[in-house]
Length: 222
Image (cartoon, rainbow, N blue to C red; front, side, top):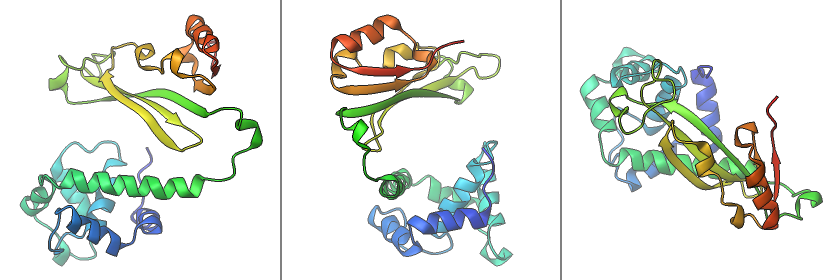
């Protein structure tokens, strides 16, 4: 992922959420009762900037990113108070609410008139999986396929409704498990169109979808 600039991040975030809204959300979920040295918008912006680089592995790096985005050294925050914010039980709640708000705003932008040719389907589903490495100590519970590079890895399997612009099912499992075990059941796809890439090519499965009154469009391996 290409690292995001500070200006670009602020523009994108403030396009959907203003600082006042973020402060209100932080207070409502009891993440920050009093807004002091660490502002919610500054924190969120710095976290996205740090993780967009793709090589952040420690809280110290997150803290350095945060301080590097301040206008002066007087606004720098020491490691301990920064870490204390991230270890709060309300922090993941705040981030979840923020993510939901951003997704809602993005959905509103994407929603438009549905072309008539799509109205023959009750749903158009997109199913795919994405793998990523996790801490090596989790290799027994979540073994990776490429053990020399990533001993521990998981795959996130998602089925998304394109017309509703929302996920309908998501499962996280060990990367070594077959992705075919996480696709939608054929008997649930009546009057629905399933889109999948070549990795899900399975003639028997596609035949079952058709038998249950569903439709499919899949990639083909060369």
